[in-house]
Structures are given as C-alpha cells and as structure tokens.
Image (cartoon, rainbow, N blue to C red; front, side, top):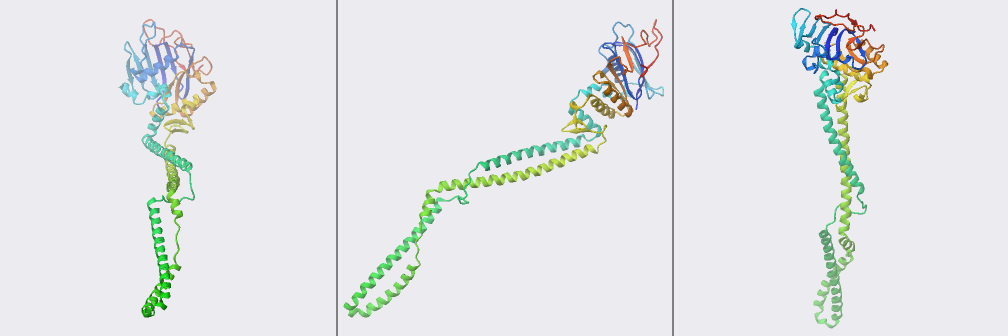
Length: 436
C-alpha cells in the first residue's frame, strides 16, 4: 500500500510553512485551535494528489507574495510537487521518469482524500458502493426486486383473503335451507302432476260408484226381466269382473298433499334468499382458505429469497466483518448508518474506501474533535492493526495530537520558510508524528 512519507506545505490558505512526516500506520492527529491552518493541511494534500478539482478557490495565503508550494514524498518513492505562479504539477517516479495526474489517479482513491463525500452520502449510496466493491450488486438487486414483487403479490392476496373471510363471517347462514335455489316453475309443475293424479283417482272412485249402482239395479231387474236373464247374467258377469278390478285398484289409491308445495311456492323468494346467502358464505370461506394457502406459499418463496440474499453477502469478500446490506441500506453489526457510533462510522467508511483502491494506504479526516479520547484511541488501534495511515485534524492542543498548528506553522517551526526564496530563512526541521 502506498502511503504519505513526508509533506511540505507553504503559503496555502492559512498555512505559512509546515513540514511533517506522518506516522506510517495508525493515526496522525493535526491539532490546534480554530483558524490556525489545520484543515489547510488536509486541503493541501488533497490538492496535491487529487488534482485541480481539489484546488481551493483561494489557494494563496492572504498577504503572501510567494505562490503556494506543495511537496509530497510517497512510500513508493514518488515525489509530487506543485509550485510556481500556476502551481504546475510535477510527478517523478522512483526510476526518475516523469509522470502526471494520470499516474496519481491510478492509485489515489478519490474518497480517501475526500472521506466526507462518503460519510455524507445516503445509506443506499453507501450500500451501492459496498456492493460494487464485492461484485454482488446486480445479483442482490435481482433478488431484492423479486422479493419485492412476491411480497406485493402476497400482500394483495392476504388482503383478498381477509376480505373474503370477513365477508363470509358477516353472511347469515340458514341450516334448514336447501343446497340449491328453488324454481317456482318446477314447484308448479310438481303441483300440477299431483292434481292430475288426484283427478284420475277421483275419476276411478266415480267409476266405482257407478258400477256398484249399476250392478244393484241390474240385480233387481233379474226377477222382472226373466226373459232377459241370459243376457243380464252375461252383463252381470262382465260387470262383476270389472268391479273386481276396480276394487283392487281402489285399495292402492293414496291421495298426495300439495300443502308443502303450496307453502314453498308462497315462500320461494325467502327460501332462495337463504340458499344464496349460504352459497355466498360457503364460497367466501373456500376462497379465503385458497388465498391463505397461496399466501403461505408466497411466504415460503420470500423466505427462500431472503436466505439467498443472506448467503450471497455471507459468502462475499467483505471489507469488514459485520458489514451487510439490508433493504438496500448499508448496515454494520445489524445497525444502520445513523445508529452507528462515530468510531464505527469511521471504521466502516475507511474499510470500504480502502477496498476501492487497495494500493491507496491512507485517508484524510477533518474535524475529529467530535470523538472522545477513548474512541480516538480505539480508532487509532484499528488503523494500526489494519496497516492504514490516517491524517486527521482536531480542535485540540492536548497530548492526543501528533503535531500542533499555530498561526500557519507547526509549533516550534514559527517564522521559517520551506522554499529558498530571496531573503527567506533556512528550511525548518522535519516534525515527525508522535514528537509532541
């Protein structure tokens, strides 16, 4: 990893003359009071390495007739300089060959010199950067889209199931009603058939009465009509045979009642209303059960997709253990960005930015006064463990500061200049991090 070995800054913003050798691995804290030039040190490094898009709007120190001067030595031997009226860039590699901004861009990560850009991005933007680093963004997006689609489908089906169940519950039920609606024409047809059969029975009864009367009359005439005896006997025998048949038929006759049909005809609308209510209730309950089955099936699909997402991130080469993406947002140990501590946010941001360009072994951090000393030390130990270099500013003059900036100088270098200008004082000695 490439780190910053030495830096010399002169006449940039509030800096008058500063020469520093940052700690190679862990935290170098540039301390001092407000308005002394701390942030100017970081802005100078960003300008030197990041190019003119990081050039301050007013780079020249107020009151100085000498143009800005930037000189950085990197751990790979590269020397980066900006000097002269136009602050022209000069990059020399270890082999003595000249390079330019393109060479710096090949290993200097933009977010390493502008970490606030990452810190202030949205949770989704942070998550997208992480997914791009580990190479699972497209697959995770596909799974999340599928999960959302099935979730919405399941939600709709669940609503329908609830509506069906509620509708079924509200419907009245009549256990004594038939299963199918009654047809008025069918009842009338049945009534007419019964009346027809009863009419036939009546006709047969009348026939019986007629035969009995006729036989009795014929019997009385036998004595009187001796001359017609033979004829009458024949008729008598014939009538007797018919009478026997008629009597036999009459014994099996049973009249049917139409009272129930007449009542049903009168109540057909009420009966059919009950039947339709029962059918609606049965169908609503069946539909509700069907939709519940679909809901449970979709729940299983969602669970499977979520497991695929978990496996995808679990098996990915993450920059930091505990990092993940949930619902499109970056999380660390289960916490979203706004629930992380300041140290956790810095640790996450540093780990992700480091992975963007692994050769870039440093980051710049401004305004670390928001951290208490315990958190600051914890962060410094983590940087040392990871072999990373961080140069940070802090409004403080305490022992936690590696160097102190006072009125544009490193304390103890006051009044010196780094370039040999006409009438200039000899360059100041180099201040190494940790000497204070």
